[in-house]
Length: 337
Image 1: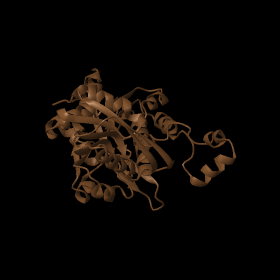
Image 2: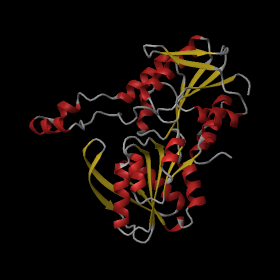
Image 3: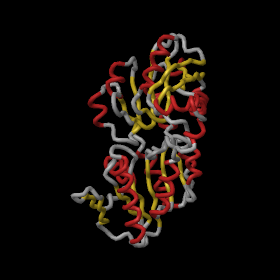
Image 4: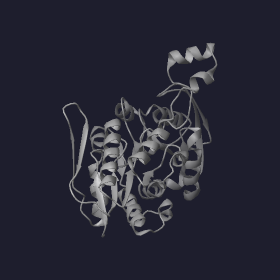
């Protein structure tokens, strides 16, 4: 492919390598290092003048360092006269901070009872918007990402954003790996994911259910109410991300109590921080399926229940279509082969 260069940041070199292998090109030469004071330094090792540049960097691991590295790489390519710079961000960082919300801090929660809640809500940052501004100022001309936590984040940008969906790959995995999928029910672990599960349930022609949860504070779920009938069915929990996995593990218990025969969890972004791995090992899942928008090799070694769907071909096809000026919407409902 002429006039295209793909560079990888340090967050997910395996995914970047899979993307270029699919495209039939070599990964661009780039050297990233840290000075003794931990400042990030990036050197692009080949000419990008007049090239269509794609930089693959996921919002995982050392998120702040990786974000800064991405910004520096974008800027380095832009001032080296690249014709267009596209940031390929499989898991968008700070996506959960997309609106002003009540603080999760317990002490502040107690103060809220004595004062007006809006006073605390008004001082919460909208960090996803800040990240969007930073990417634009650094020089990004286009963003390719997958399953944004909130689709309105696309509106935080004044540049084009292609938000790909893991749904086609998820449907393919369900049909190939769950024999009883026709007797399944798709479950959302919270009300916010209702649209996602109804879309999958419609494509599979099965029913859906959802779990309403209330949080006392961040990363802790207080109570859960199941809406829907899962008795004698295979329950498939679907969500866009799992961090400490408290929500999906509680949801799995709730589903088994309600009569589900088996419980699977399918997640786009498996962050798995803190006690997540031990919680999954102790939970009643048949399998916890994630995509490789975040590196999963270490998690899969620590937890045999975790399985991985490769979505590199979707990003590779999105890069190819963007480079050739073709429509990307085909990928919203199909897996490229």
